[in-house]
Length: 390
Image 1 (tube, one colour):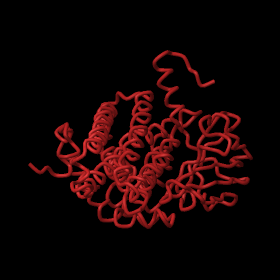
Image 2: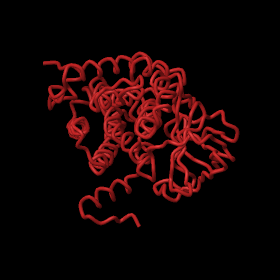
Image 3: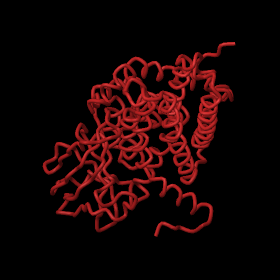
């Protein structure tokens, strides 16, 4: 019996655990990726181009801030957001990352911590993709330890004046508004900074060997003056940005499985048609072992992501559980993509085939929103009760 491609990579029958709305959302997102991303991604990656015009298309399809409710946001479930992230990353990590920066970081910061006026001003336009946001937390010397950030916001009469720098900030050079986290005399606070404000500049980082079809920037804030109502009133201390980071990390748990699934499917197709010594590569035991091991880890990751998604929808997810998902699924997805690449032989290093590109991108995903080491220690703290970060 010949199975469909989806059936071949769902031997556990995980689709039976999804409801019709979730399956429909996944199908529509997959169709969008097949039509708008897949035919162009090799060229975008090679030329280091992010297609900024795609943001309004993502917005029109309800894919920006899709798990947020009210103020023009789509209000979809956590599982639906996860499934969409998976399909987007099956196209490319850079495109899924753009959706995460916009929705899980910038829009989440406003939704969770903003005033009603801030939500009314920004969220509907951001959900439509007509306004682009970015999220400025990481600094040149403050990555895994954001408490040491040097960016400072001081009071000057009724205004705030911010000076400092940020690094690896997605979408910053095309953003209309930046969520900037800064030290103040009252601890770390968040600010909404229109990118047209004098003293704000964003410079794309070039020479990247990964995430080439995306934008990451250095930001400089040189005495950026803001009115008092630019502050996010609901965010105090690191809990504010961490709540947003957990939204992004949750999306990664699902997203990387898209890169893994696409790599497995590509390798399975290639091996089925590549003839060596008079028979297809799929006829050889070593190839079947690779395919079987890739499928095992993919499906285990899918079950983990779905479990976390259901828990999130039920309001019962904990940060260490998200760390478990991020650490495991990124680590296994990289291994799946690398193993898939070997099935292509020398052909696998070209942009004609996706696994090497996916593995390349996942090196960045492995680092951002918490390194392996950070998530390991988060899990270790939950397990032992001891914080080993210092």
